[in-house]
Amino acid sequence: MNQFFAEFFGTAMILCLGSGVVANVLLNKTKGHNGGWIVITSGWAIGVFTGVLIAADVSGAHLNPAVTLALVLAGKFSASLMPVYISAQMLGAMFGSTLAWLAYKKHFDATDDADSKLAVFATIPNIRGYWYNLVTEIIGTYILALAVLYMAAPDVGLGALNALPVALVVMGIGVSLGGPTGYAINPARDLGPRIMHFILPVPGKRNSDWKYSWVPVVGPMIGAALAAMMFVLF
Image (cartoon, rainbow, N blue to C red; front, side, top):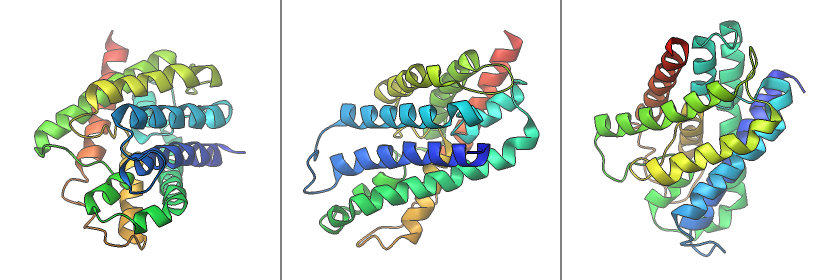
């Protein structure tokens, strides 16, 4: 497996398990219906754990354009590989969210709430305020990227032994800072599945909320850049 496919499959696992747990909690007639926020954050953390295990020894398990940017700005990764990594992450996120949709197809059909259907794919702020939401994404991603920078091996990224620590950081961000926006903290995690929500024949779906879509892309990239600056300077 080469670096592209490592990033593709690693990111796909994050989204398959992450979107899957959101579907399990929010959609009707599932075994986990109304399971709550802790279940959702745990599912995403386990998705990250699985993705890092799959990709770590081949690609360094970035699995997130913001993490790739932070590693490049900190001098830990070659900028020439950014297009390969980010395209793999985007496609992997699209594929993983599609797998979750297939697994829960009948439950999408049984659910009337269009917001819940969108939430399986993409983040939706509980209180909409674009700049406020942007700051939330910046803070969450700053914490994630800074943690990754201190864990990452020189010139690579994460190793398999970092799977659990990274998963715990992601869970911590989710339970502590995920309430306002749903903690995208990863542009591919939000934009890729949002595109699939737009494309897939989800019955009774609403619009894909493109007006908000820039926040979970721009916020994480700013947070990653700030984390890299902090890492280099201090």
